[in-house]
Length: 213
Image 1 (cartoon, rainbow, N blue to C red):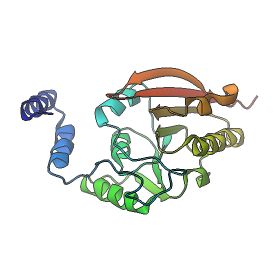
Image 2 (image 1 turned 135 degrees about the horizontal axis):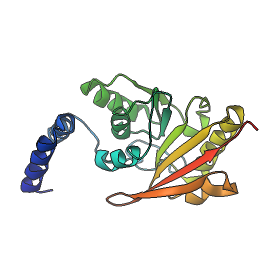
Image 3 (image 1 turned 180 degrees about the vertical axis):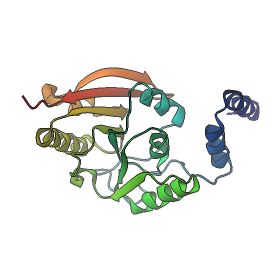
């Protein structure tokens, strides 16, 4: 983005009164926040367990989240939360609980620094393989930005299905760059109900519900 375009965007944010967004962008431009891309080789991770990290982009995720009626009874997991870019956006919404699950402790350390610099305290982070994070009965939203191969996605979606049997509820899945779309919809349990544009990819939205009767 050129300096002129950046300046115009800043003026637009000021005109709209979006001081927080302007503040975040200023910290990014100064290198105080770190959402730079990371390849799995840099983190010494296996391609069988993880994909490269890149940031979602606040504006695009905000558009998606604004389509939901999020309340203080909702809770969300960001699988493959990386440096916390999506977590920072999620913290703008009234979720009762926000949890980032990330396999790399190095990435968690960066995310925690980013969160601390924005004084965000309502986010919890867990360092583990996504398929091993099974204590999910309290969550009804799940976010993915193509964080791992379809073999891992299969196990994670399977865990969500098992959780819905233990605690029947409606689940919403937000999936950016849905490489494993067929894995999510396998068996017809989750259905794609919407899609949204991203500057490179697409957001797919899925819903599924387990009833008590």
